[in-house]
Image 1 (tube, one colour):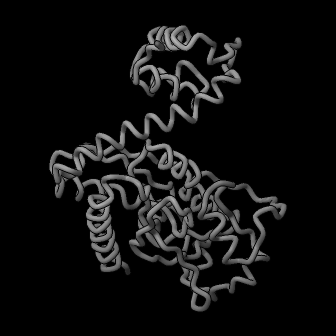
Image 2 (cartoon, helix red, strand yellow):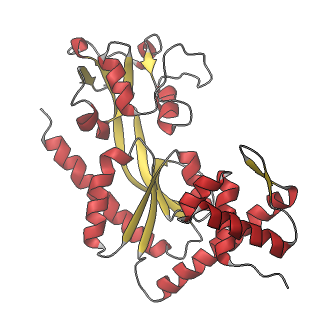
Amino acid sequence: MINFTFKQLRYFDALARLGHFGRAADVCAISQPALSMQIKELEESLGTALFERGARQIRLTSFGKKLAPRVGDILRSADDLGDLARASRGRLMDQLRIGVIPTIAPYLLPTIIGDLTRIYAGVDIHVRETLTSKLLQELAEGRLDTAIVALPISESSFTEVALFTEKFVLVRPGEDEGKPVPSREMLREMKLLLLEEGHCFRDQALSFCDLQSAQPREEMDATSLSTLVQMVGAGIGVTLIPEMAVAVETRSASVSIAHFKNHQPTRTVGMIWRKTNPLANQLVQISEAVRHSADALRDERSQVKP
């Protein structure tokens, strides 16, 4: 009989995903030697090597590649059992693992987290900020309970709940204050600064301007909205940002904000989770709380506009 533990499977899963003993040990909150020993014991139990260990990196063996998705299924099922037990007792989850994309996280998270911890006393909230593609993968693998993203996702395995729709605004150098707002056709001829590849907000901006993502670009792409706004303040070009980011990102930049009159670009922000998640009913309740927090924050910001 083959003997192994769930803990060893979790260690294997982390190492398979990260490809690095040190990073996997950090994620698993154990020492690197302890992780190595557990992986070695798992390999001995299975009677075959799971990783090819090189000087600088490790790779899954052919058997390890076959094992990885099955281990993922086992771990997801084990996590779902715990969620199912809590759901059957009518209890709200004691831990919420929530993912958020970078163009939302800095502007909504402080309010949302504060409200959720007040409404659901005792809930332990873990936040993961990363790109949509990674959030979808981690949701599918059961490493996240829910995520706040731009909709639609159009994945049949996820439930999508729209929270609100917000406008994009044009950020120009400060000296452009009061000038006519360019049309989206005119934007194509301007130095439009964008986030780097992988950000859904980049794709939304390109779609509004009817530009192709693969089109050669000479301007520098940025990793954050903050960098984009600072670049505009330095006179490098113009950019689009979501309305929720205006108050935070324009405080220390010499820029002006303009709203489009026709063909107003927008995005829909929503929450998603696996349809098979046993805590789906609780997540619906949480989505309502998040919607209320976001609406209250937007009303507050609209009242302080000059």
